[in-house]
Image (cartoon, rainbow, N blue to C red; front, side):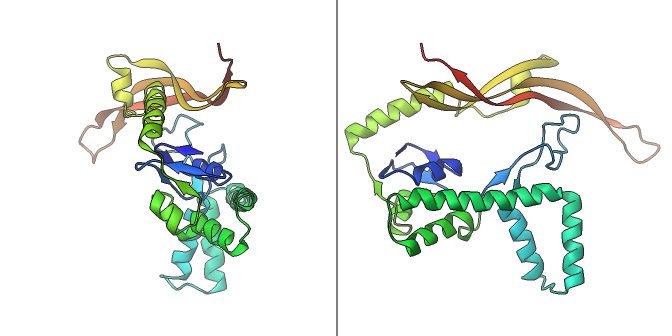
Length: 257
């Protein structure tokens, strides 16, 4: 497994199945706590007219909220806790709450299977999974190769100068194709247009024999005017918003030429 830059979440999970992980100086791993995004997730208030614009729900965020309630706020009364859970289920659909916890169990089971292919120490495996799923404290926690090797005990290797040049050349090619260094700014993409169709290539899985699988987002950006009410008798203020009408998001197959 070669990691030229960031391998977060599912990228880290995939790397756990490798016999050897080659990380450049810039490379990082990250926690694997799952976040789910589906039609029952809370609506993203920035795009109220787009039914596909949902807010991802992380099991660690839910766990953190409940830990705050019982830990820092010291709420232990059963009736109060029951009401807190009821209120939470009004903001996050109960099926979503169940799915994120089920997903967490599946992630832990998969991580265990992958690590067991290269490690025989159950205590060490449990320590790695625990850190990557919750003990790191945040989904944004950054794990550089020294910590991955010395603290977690993963089989991390450093590429020599010649190998690093090859890795960088390949990564730069992918970075250009996916426009990784270009910030996503719908205003810039729209320019002077009021609406524009888009097709964004967001992820690649390639092989010589199997062709290319691309994760794409497709839809239309629409510029709209929104009235912001003020205290009477002041007239409403108009502001421009951009609605993301996303029609498709998922994997597509491309046969290699």
